[in-house]
Length: 493
Ligand SMILES: [Zn+2]
Image (cartoon, rainbow, N blue to C red; front, side, top):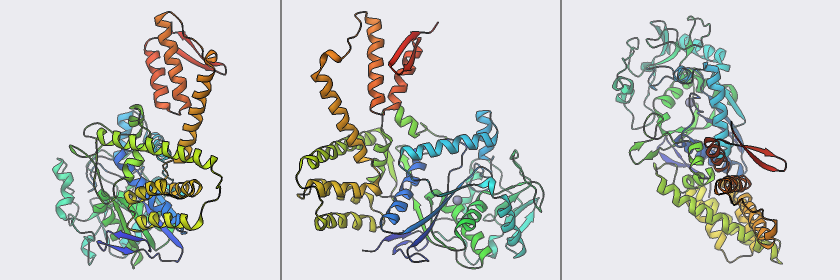
C-alpha cells in the first residue's frame, strides 16, 4: 500500500507523490520563541516528526526546513496586538534577542526529551530580512501589494481564490477586534495582511531594519514563504503546522508565495489538530501552563507523553487530563517491561537470527497503519501484535527495534536500563552488608534516606525527582555536594 496522506487543500486522503521521485521537501512552521512551548504545540511537532521519520523509513530522502519566529508575530494572528517577542522580553526583563536565544534552546531541549528530530535547516526570521524585502518588493512591482499608512499590505482582492482551506471566513479575522484591539483602518479589505510594518498603533518592535519603505520590521506570514523558498526552492511537497496555523497564516503564505512565483507552490498541507483540556483549547494564557518540565516535575516521563499522543490520530482533537496521562504512563511502563522480558528471552534463546518472512509479515501491519494517513494508534497496535506474536524472540525483538525507529518511544534503551537496574538490586540484596546503614538520629536519618532516594532517582535518569529532593533539602537548610565518592551534606549557615 502506498502512503495515503490527508491533504487540507483537497480535503481528502490522497496517494502521496512528491515532485521529484524519492525526494521530499518539507517545511514546518517553527515556534515563536517568546515563551516555553506548551505540550499542545509539542504534539504538533511530534506528529510532524512521525511524518518525517516514516518518510525516511520508507526510503525517501527528506529535506526539511523550519523557521524560528523571533520577530513580527503579533498577539493576534490578524496583524493586531502587541509583538509577542516584545511582550516576552518585557515579562522577563530581558532583550528580545536574549528571549529568543533562551526560548529557542528551551524548545530544542523539549524536542530532545520527546525524541523529536530537529530539521536539518532551522532559520531564525531575523537572519533573512533581505530575502523578505526582496519578495515584498517583487509583490509591489507585480501589483499584489500596496502601501498605506507607512505599512505594506498584501492585496487579497487580486487573487482568484483567497480562502483556500474550507471552514474559514472573514469573521475569523476579527479575533483581534473581539479581544478589544482596534482593527487596522489602513487595510483596503479585512483579509489583506501586513508584509512590512513601519508604523504600528501598538508599542513598537525593538528590532528594526532599513527598507525601501522606511525603518521597520516584517509581518509574520512573509517569513515562512521566504524561508521555505530560500532553502527548498520554488516547489514544496509538504507544508506542516498546527490547525490554528491554517488560517490566516497558511492561507496568507499561499497567497503571497504563489503571487510571487506565478505558479503553484505547495502540493500537500498537513495540519495537526488541537490538544484540548477539559475546559477547552490549551493556551499559554488560560489555566495551568502545561510544559514538558511541568510534567517531569510531577514525575512523568516525557516519552510517556509521546506514547499518549501516538495513541490518537493527528487529525482528531486530543483531550489532555492527568487521568489520561496516568493511564498512558502505566501502559508505557508495562510496555517497557515487556520489551525487557523479550530482551532476556532473546538472549537465552538458541535462535539468534530473525525469521525474515515472519518479520516482513509483522512489518506489513505496521506500514499498513502508517500508510493510512499516519495512523499511529494502529501502528502502536501493530507493535503489541508483534510482542505477542508466536514467532521467535529474535524476530519479535527485530520488529520492536524496527518500529521504534519511527515511533521513537526509546523502548530498547529504557528496557536495557530496567534490566541493569534490576541486576543492581539483585546484587544489593545478595550482599546486604554492602548497603550502608542509616543513622539512628531520626533527623539525620531522614536526610540520609532522601540522599539515597536522590541517588536512586539519578541512576534511573529521573532528573526531575533528583532535583526535587535537592530543592526540598535546600529549603530545610541542607546543602548537598556531589563528590566522586558520593554525595555529602552540610548545613547552610
Ligand atoms: Zn509559518
